[in-house]
Length: 156
Picture 1 (cartoon, rainbow, N blue to C red):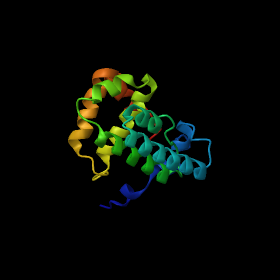
Picture 2 (tube, helix red, strand yellow; picture 1 turned 135 degrees about the vertical axis):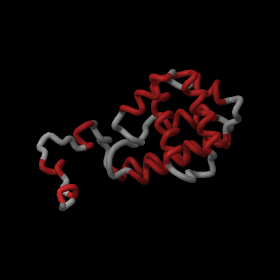
Picture 3 (cartoon, rainbow, N blue to C red; picture 1 turned 180 degrees about the vertical axis):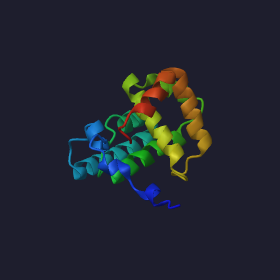
Picture 4 (cartoon, one colour; picture 1 turned 45 degrees about the vertical axis):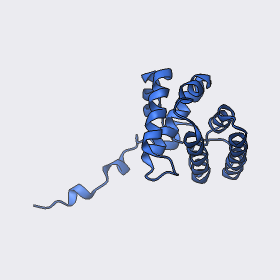
């Protein structure tokens, strides 16, 4: 009995298959501009951290997250900036920072937390730091935040 039929990709013959690009609108900015914006935000974040302004740094990195294809380098820079903030924050300051964030930033922060957990060895941040942030964010934003992140097709 032959098993060759299992190697056929039947989805390529289906006309109703949706591509990722059809499910959400990508960032309208060109990839070069998105990368330049990510680099300038990274410099702003470092400046804010040196001044001790954690909330300003966190707001800066979450306000304009890069979405879509062809912006992988910008996504990586933004993740590194966020992980730097997470690592610089004391555990006792996390709840107040999360409460001070605008509610639309909660989902974006949760996306970055999951991205940090998915990337092995992402920066110098440990899994316990990411889990502590996840716990405090879930306390403030609720489980709806998790559901919205899991069902959103726009990845950071």
